[in-house]
Image 1 (tube, rainbow, N blue to C red):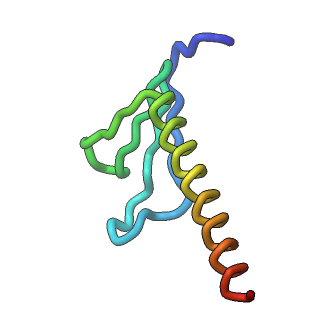
Image 2 (image 1 turned 120 degrees about the vertical axis):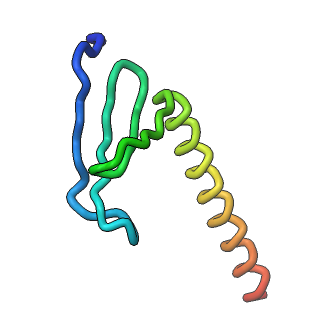
Length: 77
């Protein structure tokens, strides 16, 4: 894999909630940074933490689906 030497910066197509501003995503080395367009406050996390968070969310979603299916099967009996 090639090391990143420059910051990759992209802006979302749609505005974010009631802020009515786009989110700017910056990727440099192994850090992902999010901020609202036109603001200075940045939220930074290593990519590995973001990936772990998404994995946990997906696992919870699958567990909820399984529980819902079990509940529906018990009701139908």
